[in-house]
Amino acid sequence: MKCANRYRDFVETLLSGLLLIVLIPGVALADAPADCFDPVAAPVYPDTRGTETLTPQADAARFLNMATFGATPDDIGHLSRMTLSQWLNEQFAMEASCHLAVLNQTQDNNQRENRMEVWFRHAVTAPDQLRQRVAFALSEIVVVSDAGSGIPANALAVYYDILVRNAFGNFRDILEQVTLSPAMGRYLSMLGNQKANRAKGIRADENFAREVMQLFTIGLVQLSPSGVPVRENGETIATYSQADIEGLASVFTGWTWGDSLGFFDGDDWRISMAPFQAYHDRNEKTILDRKHIAAGGSAEKDLDIALKALFNHPNVGPFIGRRLIQRLVTSNPSPQYIARVARRFDDNGQGVRGDMKSVIKAVLLDPEALGGVSVNSRFGKLREPLLVLTHLWRAFDGNAADGTLPYYYPDSAIGQAPLSAPSVFNFFRPDYAPSGGVKNNGLVAPEFQWVNDANNTRFYNELFGLTQWYYKGNPYADRNNILININMLKNHAKSPPGLVNYLDLVLTGKKLPDDTKRVLQGYLRTIPLDRGSEKGVRRSLEALYLIMSSPHYLIQR
Image (cartoon, rainbow, N blue to C red):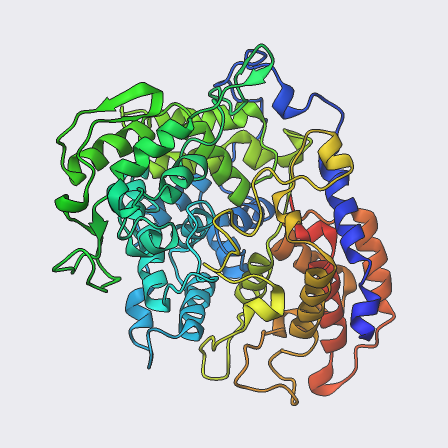
């Protein structure tokens, strides 16, 4: 309770920290005219980072905090000896670390606890960090969840592996494999969806048809290449109608379990859904932009036509590009940034649409991503609780005494767990704006939808415990829990400036303001170094918690 009282006002501090970052005078993005800029011209950025020069350590740390589950000292050193492009190519070449194979090695591959343990193991220790991080970003865009859905743990691992395997592939393949996943089929009602039969009171289910457009591909309104809504007479233009939903719902009929002998049996979550033509609507259908699908088509042919129409819609590049930018880099990318990413989605330079490697490069190597507030004064995003946790364990070698990462209860501890969003809209909506200055300035802060009194208190109490109690060398800590290694911090503890500078590098990429560092260094000098095995422990842990709980860390800049 003392800890909760001590930090009960921190949510206001966090919001103030974000406001300091994003509240800059200017035209709201939603109201910016579509023709007021060159959509492919990059802003001038004087450095040559990401080309043929080596990467300064601070830049390496900052980049890794966008492209991985958190920068580590070793990874910073590794990246500093190469260019950003070289690091990306190195990551692209790595074999995918999949989840189901590891989950199957546990005693029960259908236990949620085991799935969580496998997810954290990959997030914290897998070498293909970029792939894992992009897969997590995709999992918050094409959402499937175990919250109230009855989808078992192994099915969710299969689904997550679709995103892992295809993270560097083509978005068209992601769209098709997600559509035919039995986990998605269960979550959004396409599994067992039948053609309409008025006599039996059967209607084609519209759930997946609606969400695949609204959330997974094109969004609600027509967009310019920069992601700005197109308007006619001051009004936005809808991308689809109820008739389009009904047409697509008919397309998505006739699919059920891949191992089914009949339409109503089967139960294999590992393989894609299979078509049963007798349950597929073979009538003529009208979908996006009055596109007609001729009568008599098979379930497979109709699905291919529909997915091609969605994939080739001009909205997909700016829509998906903006969401990837928000999940990896910043909440309020400029229209120019979105346009450059969308351009790479439309054409990777070799005539290929939807190339994820090209899109990822565009997202992470854009001058706005690299320049931050020096290029876009509205730059910044609140770190998700899961990403704070994985960064802590990655940066400080968190594991149990046997070297593993045993099960951790993220739901109750930090209020967020992978593939456990409360709805298909994820933990937070991409256009969420807290009332006040953010909303009044036409900006968004998606992750702040998670922030409330209960989540805030729970998160800071947990972070306090993880940084003050769960460390290697604490004689009272349970060796079966995940403990961090603070030896490097203890080595720096004799010099408060050295300790603060080290943490500033690894955690923020040298983004702590000078006045904040001076105050923190002064405070740390008041903490005795102690002796023996406790030498430097108190200073180290206090510095670690104060930086990780500060807006300067929690707002990724």
